[in-house]
Length: 114
Image 1: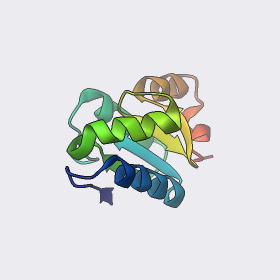
Image 2: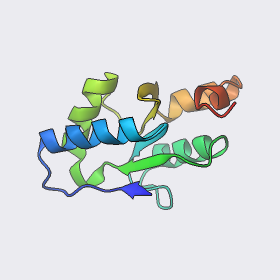
Image 3: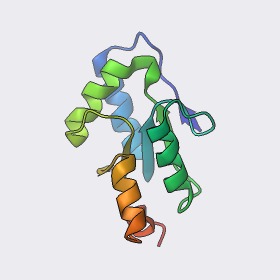
Image 4: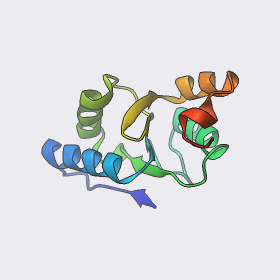
């Protein structure tokens, strides 16, 4: 399932959506595009890395309200860049961090797959 907001959503609405999706899902990837059609290479890489270890995870397409999502996510993660991965509501990192964890053999555990 992909959660896709409307472009005219106000910042408070986006912040509420971020809170809800983080509370309702174990693994969440905020990305450009969706799982089937990522809209940037970093988002595509993040989907590939997560998919190697967990079957069920939520993706949120930030493109329809990118500035609002950047602001809402930065308050949760301290990061401005997309994609962003959260596990159990905690920020893990972007595609570069996922790749580093995967290289060290730690990604599955970080995603709760082990």
